[in-house]
Amino acid sequence: MGGFTFDWHYLSHIIPGLLDGLRVTVEIALTCIALSLLVGYVGATVIFFDVPVVRRFVEGYVAVIRNTPMLVQLFFFYFGLPEIGIRTDALSSGVIVLSIWSGAYQIENLRGAVQNLPKPLLENIRALGIRPASAYLSIIAPVATRTVLPAMMNTAVSTTKNSALLTAIGVPELTYVAMDNIAFSSRAMENFFALFVGYVTVVLCMSAVSTVIESRLGRGFKR
Image (tube, rainbow, N blue to C red):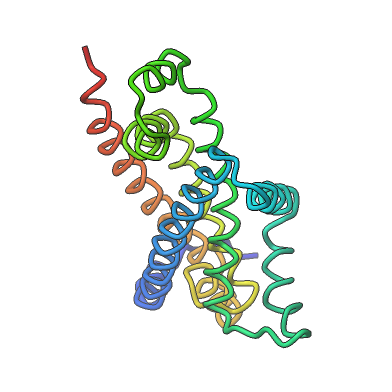
């Protein structure tokens, strides 16, 4: 039996297609991260102000999403909802489901941060007579964001990595392209090596951005 040989020539041949897949992955990730942050802030605000009925809906949504696998949610949305007449293409379905999944975790990140703010801060806000809405927008939410930024970035990274699950419904992101290459060529090692490098590169870039953001948000807190 001959030994395995890593084919660098084959890898160079498939790089253009993999880069297209990586571009789709990054676009999906950025879109879903932005939408999930929107969901997170809206949901955390609803919980903070204890909006009647809506708060129960938000809490129920978070509980359902956090207690079911994302792949099941994806299949339910893409394959199940068409049974009742709700149809979307694979890419739209993937973005919606991934944003909903990530949004639930961002809500929990922000809710926990707001609830754990120092009591003296909240007491000072009340003593100054600042309106609740103004206090939340100008003080509570920004301070909570700074304290929970690492957790929010972890969720963003998980969102990026979970975009690989969209290959199950045919979204042509990085993992889909690699698996398609393997099906045609049976060259798994080169494709999985490319996947490894691609995802590590994206995540390291996100970590660098997170470090910069944390540094800038922390300037006002340095002594």
